[in-house]
Image 1: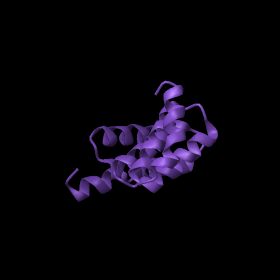
Image 2 (image 1 turned 90 degrees about the horizontal axis):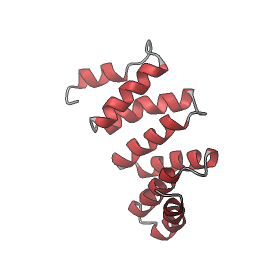
Image 3 (image 1 turned 60 degrees about the vertical axis):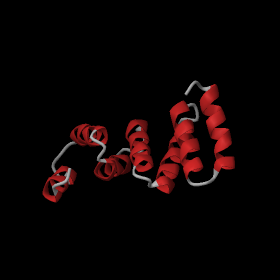
Image 4 (image 1 turned 60 degrees about the horizontal axis):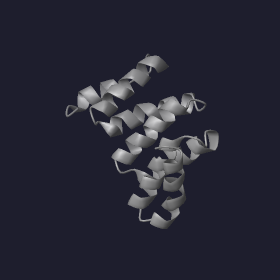
Length: 117
């Protein structure tokens, strides 16, 4: 979204429901507007920390927008809750590699491969 007014309207969620925010965030992510999607998703994660879907999409949005340390934090939190999430292992490994921490990434990419990612 190139228009700043449109972006701020999209992130305004004072009256929208969590379901509407989730759908909006997915649309923005699919449109590769990762930064605005992350703003919405961070609110969803704060309001619903028990849900893995928004946290994983938030981590992906951070990864694609090169906010790698934020992606790492979200992925580690997700893996604390669900150590069997193959994609979270893979994405954490890739984020660590992009941050120049290839040796630290190895266990995560190995687990991802074992789990079928």
